[in-house]
Length: 87
Image 1 (cartoon, rainbow, N blue to C red):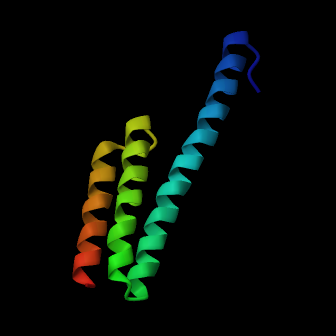
Image 2: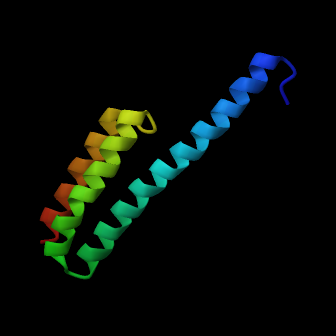
C-alpha cells in the first residue's frame, strides 16, 4: 500500500481507470464472440450487420488507449476476413 499522499491519489485514479479499461475490453470481446457465433451458425447477414458494433467497440478502446491502434486495426481486418472466408 502506498504511504505518500500523491501515491495514494495515483492508486485511486489507476483503480478507476482499470475498471473502465476492463469494461471496454469486455465490450470488444463480447462483440467479437457474437460475430464468431453468428458465422458458426451460418448467419452471415447478421454477422455483417454486427461488425459495425465490433468496429465501434474496437475504435473506442483504441481511442481510450485500452488497446493500441494497430491492434484494433488488425482485429478489424481479421474479423472482416473471417466473415468473407466463411461466407
